Image (tube, rainbow, N blue to C red; front, side, top):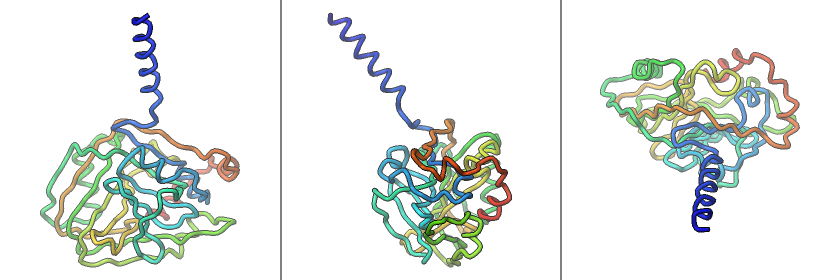
Length: 258
């Protein structure tokens, strides 16, 4: 009887371990980027639940109410007025991408670098184009250009229309952190191929989706990710279920991101 009990407990433990929804070196995502581009802005996963799957990430909030930064396990919301808020954990997200951030590469950045220079540095450190990596740059920035987006009301317009009149912020002489992901080309339609970055000032005075920056000096930490990904798709969402996601939205994404 003792042996049967032991085997039963072992089997139960194995089954439970196989049901975990996130990996210690993987990405968890909420919905898809093409759904967001098409105007599916209703949130369907709480920040509390999302944080179970990572302490680092980027995304947005219900009704497209600002830009999300998840840094060291804390959520920040950069709204369209440029201010940084701490959202309640019951707030929901229609799109986000998170991971447990465990750096396996670090470097000191002692010479000025812009956004393109940072991308070249990361590409040189991780030359395999089909590999994911999460990264954060903390340091002193001569200039950062960011944007955020205002909360929307139904019927929701597509994201390309929202960003035509997006608030853009020019931030000078600031210490802060750029966080983001580099994703392979094969994520097209699901996530953002290439680079996607958000910014948060150390004093929480500013932040947002990164359009450009000039770094004076800082440090780079990267986590090369090997598991992609657990995706939470909206349950009971008629908007998601009926949205045409067969279109190629690459041009829309390029316009929205840059």
